Length: 384
Image 1 (cartoon, rainbow, N blue to C red):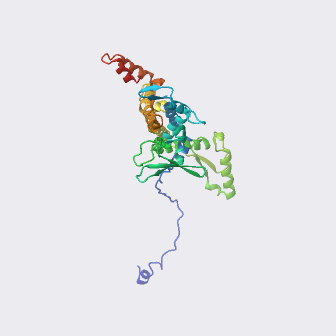
Image 2 (cartoon, rainbow, N blue to C red):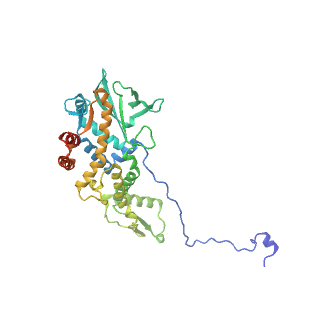
Image 3 (spheres, helix red, strand yellow):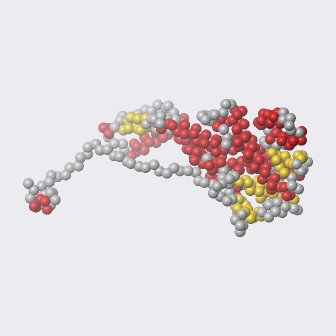
């Protein structure tokens, strides 16, 4: 029975000596998932991680740019097509270093990767004598008092030069930009919209590479029995070095391991749910193709192949992606250069595209069978 002195001392006077138990204990570590690491916004970062490292992005950009570049641009003057015009010569050989095809391919590619494309006019004695394609990451809009671009600053090699937008006879720079809902001057590229899918696809590639570097299988644990005593620091370092040098890497896959007494290898396998990253990689690739407007079937991606054949998929690429892009670029070029060349217009000639030959043939047949139209009206509908 505790007396007042025991209670005053907190019950410690007659308490037995404390003894800590070293029985089995469980340690639980609770941690929340950290935030995902995404590629930084900006043309340079996205171009390095996307076009330079990702095969899906590279193929989408090349496919759209090469298809759009295959459409001939013709010049019309007073409603009639002409092949002998200064604009034709300018588009065929815009500068001493590039052909017309190379210049336009760069324009289409920059629109896909940066959302912006810039052409500079070389004006000599009041006449446009050349065209040059400028890198989007080196351009900066110089806004006027009304908020619209009054000039462009082009920085390269530590120097910046100002390119005026005063018409003499045309503005110095043609800025082509895809629609951006939150920016007054710069466009938004398909590559920027596909950023998260791009990072997922690249991360899955790094995962696969890590598996190959670690004997092409999930890692395991080397268990040492406590009954044999503890490993010394030197033994632990030597064992770790031997594992890394002789049993890790694709070249050492399947190599037999000789274990000394007390050592046992326990493989840590991944469940089918953990291995679902393969399907996530395919889904990310399809999302990237969706952002660029390229049917997944044309890229050889599994799943979501809703087209009956390659012809239908190729036709969808042209109708939904390539033709609108080419029309936009042709309209911008025409509006920009028309004041310097007597109002001549630049239009795309889709009749010369082999991929659209079947569509054009069907249109010619329908128009030709329309008996209520005159020959002149039929020519106008067919663009002849």
